[in-house]
Length: 239
Image (cartoon, rainbow, N blue to C red):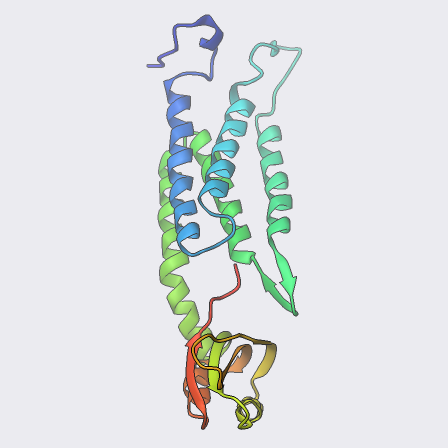
């Protein structure tokens, strides 16, 4: 049974307990997605995902219930999918703004996809399809966490990209030998930046992004070069 608020201003169709629950469900479910993105250090995190999902749910509810006062049988007909369809177009522009290209590499695809997903979750919640919304959130954590580890292993063993921070002794031609090792293994260098160190003035730090086959072996291969003090996984660019 639908329970309406007592105030006539809030007593119209589409403003009852069910719709409020659907909005809160969209808010809660997309908050979970945003929390995962925030923990991963991504640019579109908790606030962005929650706002996108809750707004999408509200727009869908407006599409379903917001025009009852102007509809008349035989004169005005409403296609509820028209406004909801605009959510898809709008999120497409938002996702395009997140994706960036830097030094020939594309970043932000996963974050853009997560924003798109949050909009879909909000639309499902707004449409009353709460079970589907919950299932998609569960699948998000499988793809974002479990599949992330699987993807790293597969790309590392087949053909992938790795970003490393290397500390080595300066003035001994170590960098030249590191580049020679990369050349022998046919690893492509997309980025090579200096990284200042505070611990030892005789040591030099660089950050290098490599791509190629069996890139998972890069850490051990470069660490074996004489004069290299440490090879560490560097923070990845936002996805």
